[in-house]
Image 1 (cartoon, rainbow, N blue to C red):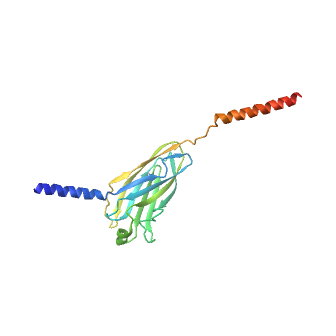
Image 2: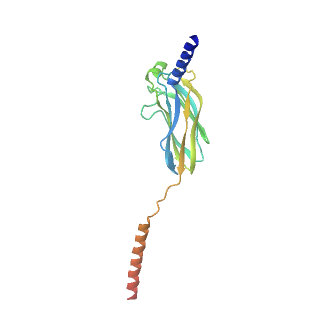
Length: 200
């Protein structure tokens, strides 16, 4: 009987730990682009409902620098605002980049109680605007250096989902056969009328 209750308790604990699975997703606004197009890549966190609030992060975004160049970085969520700067007091923000990676760091100055009671359970950490500069298929992935809760303790990330964007050549539409035939007939008629005028 004791083994049964121990097994039941272990099952309940494992299910409760997975109930608030925290994940980070890289979401591109398009999966196919042409050279010269802009791509917005959002880095979103979810699963914070019922868990401790996010207080800091230090992550590396990996991308193919032969296919994409970074144009702009926007901190926070476009709709919900920066969830690590709830009252506009600011937050420590830093970024650095090299060919193929971008390191993003942010630390909240907000109070622990404010982060835990007011921070959304899902939001965009930052967005990166990139330009497609060459043909190919480019993967975007993320690694974490540190993710901290409102207390400064390590926050476990269950899953990190990457994304891929394909850069294709700009499609040049071909003229239809009927249009070419029409242009040819008009040219032949004009040439015929010119020849008949010149022979008179």
